[in-house]
Amino acid sequence: MWFKNLRLYRLPAAGSIAVEALAEAMARFAARDMGGHEAKHLGWTPPAGRKSDALVHAIQGQFLLTMQRQERILPASVVKEEVEARCEEIEAVRGGPVPRAEKMSIKEQVYEELLPRAFVRSHRVDAWWDMAGGMIAVNTSSAKRAEEALDLLRATLGSLKLVPVATHSLPMRVMTHWLQDPSLRPSWLEVGDSMKLMAKGDDGKVTAKNVDLDTDDMQQLLESGRQAAELSITLDERVSLTLTDDLSLKGLRFSDALLDEASQADDGDDAIIRLETDFILMANALRDVIKLLLTGLGGEAAPELKSMEEAAPTPASPGADEPDPLLSEVRAFVIESRKASISAVQRHFKIGYNRAARLIEDLERQGVVSPMDNSGTRRVLKEVA
Image (tube, rainbow, N blue to C red; front, side, top):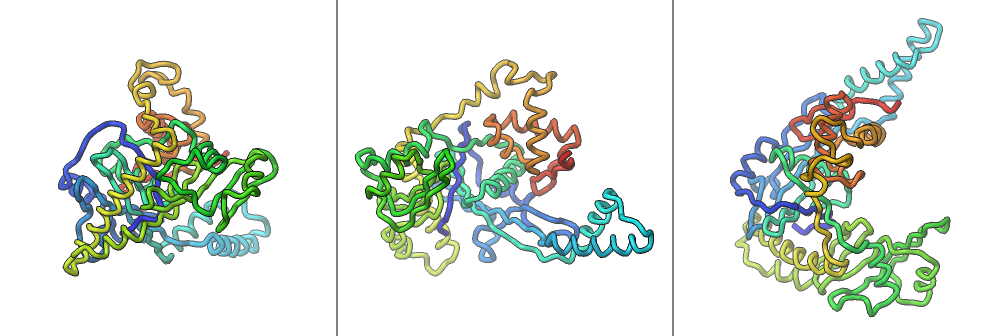
């Protein structure tokens, strides 16, 4: 039970939920066997796997949850080949090409026929909810997977305000300063041996691995205007990771001292006690180093939800009877990106959760996206024009 990656989200409003109430709500959205015509299903599964049926583990105000993502794998090439074969048969009979609209109908028919025979791939995504600290961290490097887990949690609880953690200083700028001037590095931070530099012009990116980052060659790259998009660092000699420019933490590695402490803990050969021991040791260490990291990045920027969502209606915050001025842009974004999640709209347009939720609901009324299913997801119904 040691996370590999983290994407961090803040709960702006203080609050708590009893573990019993959370477990009861999660049970209504538990993972299950997929129906034959389901392409994807999201649901909660026990973090301990088959060793326990508990959907949530709560230790000292730290909650461990696990989402299971099931998806049928139907290669596009297989569908294409079958569609082409059927179109050729029709063309041979008619003596002319199959119209585009009819091809689309044939494609949908082929997809529906082949889907029940497709293999199912399962993937687990763990989430750590620091109830006392008001933060949720998702164990994934993928923003899409994190958003799926958070959307499932919102559907489970009915409502949950979350915003990505942000800092007063841009991570790219601070990482660049740490590389340029070692004296600016906090005492608890050690720069590693890998980085990725990005340039605004046509020079592209530079990736360095297993090298000394304090050499003259590295300084010349920085002096040319490149900035650090990724940087390997060690925090408080406890956790090593790669910090990225979007404030995600990748490739987490925990110190030998922490792992030894976990291995020496007496679990009585009980797999659940071992899971919970590892989890709380990991959570406490991550909580401490994340606080240090946010401080080193200029401090955490508090989300200004009131100005975005609770203030009196303004042109940027429409009233109940006024169409949101962002609606047309959000509609275009959702159709083009095929992303119908509140989190995707919130992140792309940098707006609050409530406003993003209202926009998605407007698109549902317009028939652009489907209602939320029991896995907490929506489908984009409109095609790109």
